[in-house]
Image 1 (tube, rainbow, N blue to C red):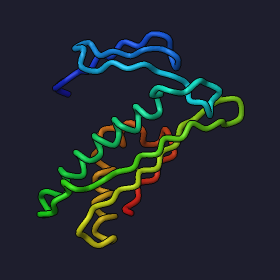
Image 2 (image 1 turned 135 degrees about the vertical axis):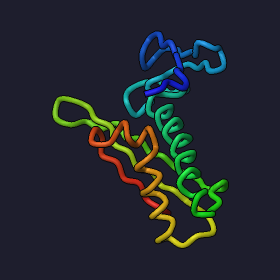
Image 3 (image 1 turned 60 degrees about the horizontal axis):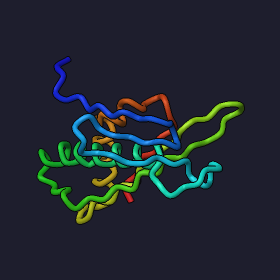
Length: 136
């Protein structure tokens, strides 16, 4: 395996803390959502994970669609990351709703499946969290 890039982010304070990238480009406060008993008003790990997965997934979608001559530059993904209680523990679940304008639903679902198979975030979570990837 050849390393191409490594992101480094320092987090202090956990869900009610602060995160900053080593290059200073990314910096944000973190707050536990009100739904989880927090004060809200800032981003949270689930939102950050959804944003990261969604942007990576659209890159994977473009990579699988381009050889087929399909333009996915206007594709939109809504990533839903759920924080769920399971017995005495917690687990994540993900729903990826992908809209690819200008193609039929059968072809769109085929591309969604192909992108899900090659997206690094999809690979990392495979078998670890319940995930649904659907063309919408």
